Image (cartoon, rainbow, N blue to C red; front, side):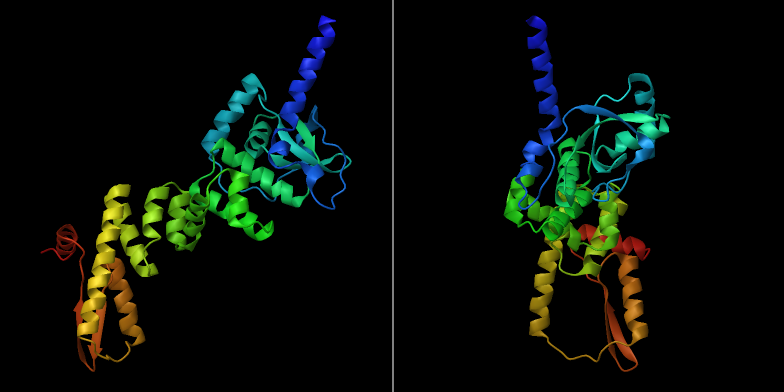
Amino acid sequence: MIETAMSDKKHMKRNALGRGLGALLNDADNVSNEKSAPTTSSINEIPVDTIEVNPYQPRTHFDQEALKELSESIKTQGIIQPITVRELEKGKYQLISGERRLQASKLAGLKSIPAYVRTANDQQMLEMAIIENIQRENLNALEIAISYQRLISECNLKQEELGDRVSKDRTTVNNYLRLLKLPPDIQASIRDNKITMGHARALVNIEKTEDQLAIFKKVISEELSVRKTEQLVKEYSQSRKDSKTTSKETKTSPAGLSYELQNLQSQLTSHFGTKIHIKAEGSKGEIRIPYVSTEDLNRILDILNM
């Protein structure tokens, strides 16, 4: 009697483990017009060479040193938590979640790995991979943003629906999606953890790409905090407003810059870390170097060795 009760208890526990993500995603049985076999909740030992990677994996970068550490842990302790796969055909599987564990197991020389086998369509594959990784908090802000965008575009979810799936409010979801409007150099820095989500949220409020890059370079070179970055962006915005007001008061119609002067303007902007304005009238003209604060002026003077 006691053995039966213990056996039932273990079975219930294994079922709960096997159906955790399925419950979160309303499971495969709730997909409209989708006929599927029951989800397998038991743990299976599957040869690692029969598992292909998840094409919907939101993580794009794996720390090789961390993988080695996990590999050593697996050699000593084994796999603590099974990976999750779906069966493509007899003896062939596709990873749903647990790519780090799979890669580390290969590094450790394992021939097989414990896995839950689930029934899932492509949409669920993407959703499971994203949600599983977000729950583990091991995606950087850019990877989360890309994953959210994929859920919207590939799974036809609205922002409100997406928020419900990932347990985030609409404002939070929108803040991540706005990161995708930043230029590639800034996105790469988010990915490489050179700047934080807070830095990026400040930079995305700047209208022009060249100005975003100029302030971004200042943030990196001076290792500015999020608060100082926000203050710099605020000063920039005020400077833009003042500049527009001045421009309206003294509006002129200068001739368009030649390709050579446009190129020079871009180079000077990059060099000084602020938007340089060149005005040309025939063979003469002027170069204007704006600054947003006394600190910014001193920085420019240092560049000019003055």
